[in-house]
Image (cartoon, rainbow, N blue to C red):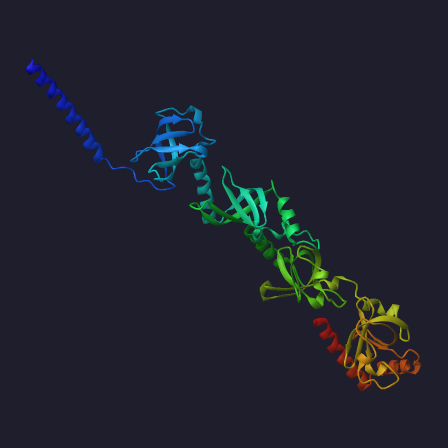
Length: 417
């Protein structure tokens, strides 16, 4: 009996030693070192309502729970203990010391790799507009990954349609909302997988396209050509126009034959316009356009419409020390010299007329070459008209030359203002 007990005790001790050896050997195996973002293969240990326990060879088993179980490429209902599956490491260790895993994010991982490649190679990607807010557009990139396109990085043509009210907050928001469901080609500006941040730019695509168009346009245009374009900027000194990818300036003096008091009343960003190329310099870096040269020049008809001696109605545009400028037709201004304001001595033209006042004037002279009208408030002085005609024909009057110089200077100042 004692020998039998001794034999049983020996067998038990042997099993304990074997188990102890296995334990020691297992401790010698290095544990996996996991970091957030790793994708590893694991074995399903248990499938529970709302969670899956997975062994990935880490110091503790991991859990996949909630929305992290959803994936288009994995049928969760078919998983059984022993099934092998790829999982994404969300947290190597949470507050309870548990490994947090995701099946859903393994599917997203491929999209992130594509985005990183697109950022590296400056590739164009396609996104679908899902939402719009005050700052821009939220777009879908596939597999529940969303990015953001700021309004400032959208093609201006999507926001502005040429209406004078374009650019107001309500209008822009309405236009952004109308884009929901549309596909947009964009480039990746900023990418941060840890913060789940994806910033895209449509403008980076359109600007590159415009650059190609610009070079093509530069090679085929010349001064005098007429192009169609859109207003890309409005400034106090003129408007910028992008025509076939070539951006240039329409200076204030080239907007209209008439004096322009308020550019914003005439043009807004996005307006479609026709322009004439009047200058190209610095290899195309500086391009000058004109709008007024495509409009009717009022001087082309002034000779046939008006004649010396006519009495017409006009509006005082500006009073200066030597007289007053009066507009008698669209884009057609003349000078009433201080000596033609009254039969009496006039020391200050402002004592006779004021800006904006409607007056009747007599045409004393018409000079098409100098684009100059000589006007008078002395309506009954016919001899003065004859003398003006004689002085203009003979070109001998130093006084008229002096007036012409002053007129040219004043017109330039008026245009500049």
